[in-house]
Image 1 (cartoon, one colour):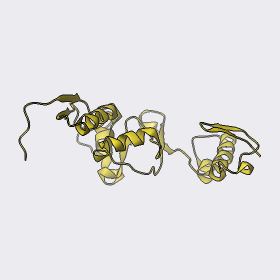
Image 2 (tube, helix red, strand yellow):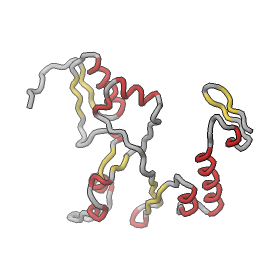
Image 3 (tube, rainbow, N blue to C red):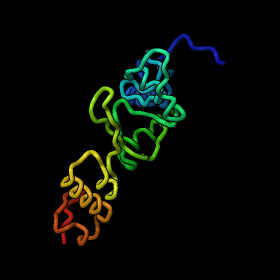
Image 4 (cartoon, rainbow, N blue to C red):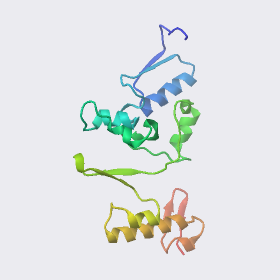
Length: 182
């Protein structure tokens, strides 16, 4: 292993997204950067942790028990302490790529989004519906909300910006102007 340098141009404390972007920018500009974090994981308060670390940080379990083992392999589950979503073609994504911070990040397609209902031993976890079928079977909504969610998800799935017949008679504003409904 290389010997650690004794002098740096910049010291960045913390490994949250802002700190990582700053560290990347300074590094790309040729600065010698020391980037450290007091936590045992990367990401600061917005980190993603595996299921064992989640239980250890927030879980209500007895010493000696390992309740996370019943959920499979540890790294099958990565839970965001603060959920975050980046649009694939957004400005933040462009910044992350141009500053080479992406060497330290992993982009993944979302397989599902889940929410916790209730607290303590009666807490349950439910998937946020992303299809019309999931909307109808979701425990998160009553029957009327399920029907509205189903209709909305069906509409989103067929919406085409350049096809007014998919706009349901609505007029939509975009940064480039107005989309007129049919």
